[in-house]
Image (tube, rainbow, N blue to C red; front, side, top):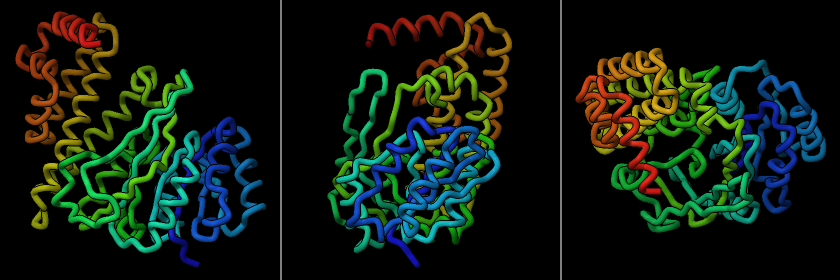
Length: 336
């Protein structure tokens, strides 16, 4: 039975959060229209047990898929394979949805046929228990547009996005496995196959931030620096291959290249967050920079425009690394 929306929950050791996540989907008016796939990624806690409580209570909506640990990308890959909904959305196991906004989204999707759909979302800061609205206003709501005409007005994060499931299935979209930071792949790999987009002016995703254990914390970035490097290099190759393809759309090339350039800048920021006296980090930084240039010279050049610090480091062949780091830190402190 086809559903309107498949929600995939990548779930690894999220027993602390999972009840809150799953409760946010329990609304009688839409339960028949959705499926919630809880992909248990080899958890060692009660993640699967909690998921099964919902699967038993709402068997036509919730399903637990347990698998060996393979990372965030592997859970999404399983979700793509198993999904039966017309549309596809990822909600991480430590995040949740605003139920009212979610119901509005599901009802809107029933009469929608766009390839990409996006909504506003919330950032929730766990440390201070505060919520921030992330609002999009570059498109008229409830009106389908050409993706090529609007894509470069704003880069869309995973939290805002809903994707037509057929695009993921029919084009063999696969994310890197055993690797963090694949949400960028999830957002960019479908782009060559997208023609239309619609914005619904509602707040759906609740994105939990300020957890020390998160991969997007400084400690997380440092711990998983090689994962970010892997994704960055993969996206540089993807951008170059797409640009060289006969069906490349100039607006899509610009969209993909800008996001790939941002990844270069983020990778550089990760290296810069380590001790300035660590010679190995500087050597790794220089090796990455040379590799990025070799993989995609166009995106490499674009990253110069996005980061003044990175531009100066390259100009000086990293000889004044500590001085440039200090000047950059002082400038950031003054802006704050």
